[in-house]
Image (cartoon, rainbow, N blue to C red; front, side, top):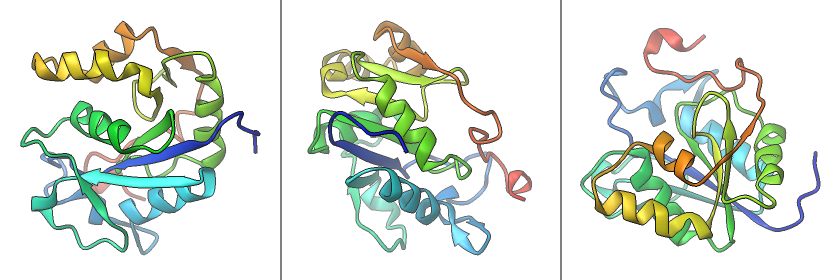
Amino acid sequence: MADLAEPVTGILLVGGASRRFGSPKALAELEGEPLAVRIHRTLEEAFEHVIAVGKAVDALPLPFPVEDDESELRASLVGLVAGLRLAPTDLAVVVPTDLPFVTAAYLRGLAAAADDAAAAHPESGPLPGAYRKAALPVLERRLAAGHLALRAAAAELGARVVPGDPQLLRNVNAPADLP
């Protein structure tokens, strides 16, 4: 495991709409474990601090607290902004609940790649991603303007692109995507 030069917060996003999935992805099970619990555990393996961000109204029955993102919008950008505001560290690695195959080692590598950058993410897109609090002004401005595309926000931040194994980074969009 790579040594990190600074403390990092792992942020789990559990507030998605799950339109294609048909039920909350956070509660879908892989190998007998809810996806959110699996990723939360991976974040705990990788980082000292871990928080989950979502919608209080969802009242998901998870074994850890979920911080309310305080927005009616369901967009990754909303969770990212809320998570960065809540993070006790300058650097955070953000993972959505639909990436159950990502490893602690890869997430730590993302954090290390953001050592001198506002953000870092894999070629496949802006999540999972490492984001610094210095990115908040750009992210908050985009959110306030209704520009919710996280990919565009990462591009504006000049995010560093980090190679990654597509098998570790595959997401779950439908129940059939689960092994």
